Length: 226
Image 1 (cartoon, rainbow, N blue to C red):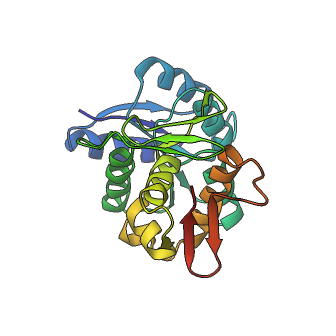
Image 2 (spheres, one colour; image 1 turned 30 degrees about the horizontal axis):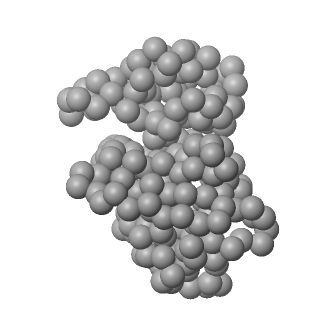
């Protein structure tokens, strides 16, 4: 059974989410501020976190950073903020998806399912290991190692890396990447790709400003070179 941590300071939203999620057989924990959210996450180990950015004690981005210090749990951000730079800030901090209030319950549930699915290991994967001069990708173990150290990637970062690595040397279009990693509803959200490719380069490239492995084909897509 999938466990969800709902973090929001609006009681009516928490109540609606708890009722709807429990009706669909999810286990649900709820927190009304950032400190409680971090404590509950550590105690209950949720499978997905639904997080409002506007919390009374700290900004939701700080909660994301706190979670990302120790867990790769998928994080879906809820916010009434519409500015794209705030969305990018949340994604850059390690969020996996972003839903703007007001939202439809079906949309949120679909995004939750997609986020949880991205975090699950894929059965029957081959044991292939991709080695570059900077890092090693173990596709079966879902691990990336750089200079002898395992690099922590979020589920979404890993999924994006995996699609690119499995298509090594080939151009993967923006549309294909968005559809494979986030789903059909995201075919035009190219800002997601910009943020996540920057994160992968920062974590894995020796010189992120002059990438050797994650190549941008302007206006077309991206290509992984081993």
